[in-house]
Amino acid sequence: MARARPWRRADTVAVIAVVALAALVRLPRLSDPQSLVFDETYYAKDACIYVHGPAALCGIDSEQTQVHPPLGKWLIAAGIRVFGYNALGWRAAPALAGLVTVALLYVL
Image (cartoon, rainbow, N blue to C red; front, side, top):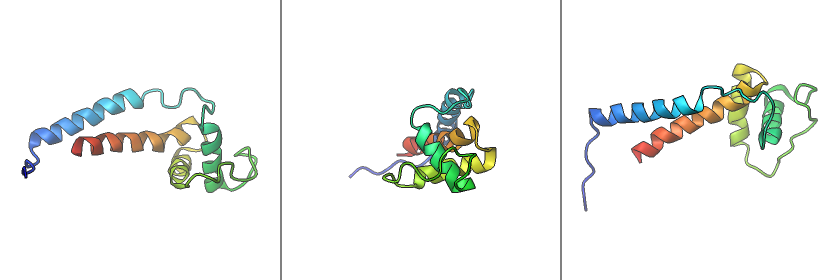
């Protein structure tokens, strides 16, 4: 059985470079377009309910996608809590999760 090689400084530099490149591709214009697109129509509104409760702000009275596990919606809700119920708010946490996934993929 082959032994795993030790983590080196070059690995640290490489993972930082790859995550920085991924951030450069993902983060500029994160809040464009300003409107809900694709599945944000459902998940951003559900996450808004998690943060603000059923209200006119969210545009719905109850959760729309009850068949899906709530972890993703809770992550989106965290972004909404920090940045508000806007395009940046409902996209920030998924973008951050994507960057963490890039780093994890490098490690694996």
